[in-house]
Image (cartoon, rainbow, N blue to C red):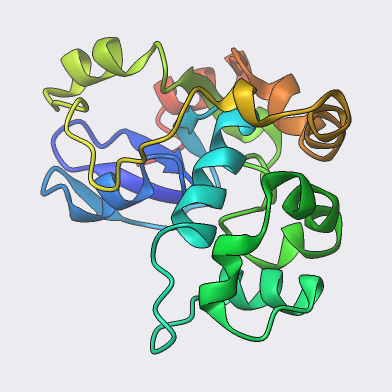
Length: 193
């Protein structure tokens, strides 16, 4: 999890790659600041996040002169020697290799990896909670920096691939809707700045 401080409210927002990360990196209201906790973690359904990563890294951005780290991991695992050949990889071929590589690249790590749930004030689902968060922060979250274009995520899953993602990202599914009273009380008591 990477964290960003909202300049006006001092609220710390956590995010991961494929979960509003580019937006927070580029938005002038936020400053990157790694603190190990967050008031709000932006959460994306892992089923959708993995499909988005697949289209971003295995269908678009296939430049042999700019092979990205996650692409190299996928290529090595699947025995692909040219990044352009990732276009031939099916989603059902990608999912079984995730367990071996998911902790080696931020595009794949669980969203709550490396942080204790008690250090997250609340988890906000980006599919439903961004308008309310944006209103509170005075930020328009509707503008996407790196939007994907694909069919609804569930259309890409078989029962076996869905079970794999649900198992690998169980901690993310468990975090949805989480609220930590302990962190909120510490924040209110002035333990964090």
